[in-house]
Length: 72
Image 1 (cartoon, rainbow, N blue to C red):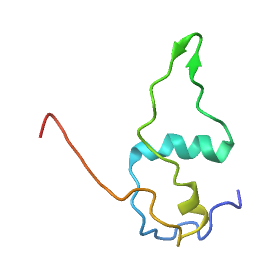
Image 2: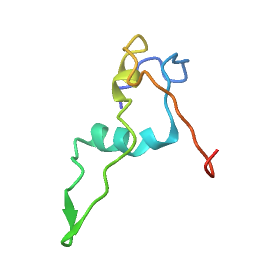
Image 3: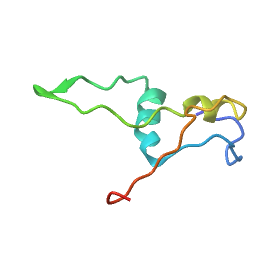
Image 4: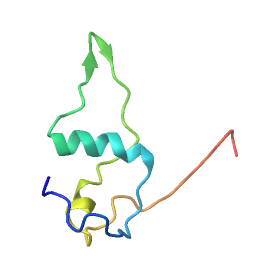
């Protein structure tokens, strides 16, 4: 609460669904563990967009958008 500026406002920065989990971790102040019960965890493809939520004028978190589905 209180960290999102202009709730419901429009942001121009690009974000994708893979950014949701890293953002939740960032907002909660939790780091992704390297392993859980001895099993190494995969890297996250997403990035936190918390800065974008806190500041509508924040710089872009990525400069490239690339999608591929079924080798197309």
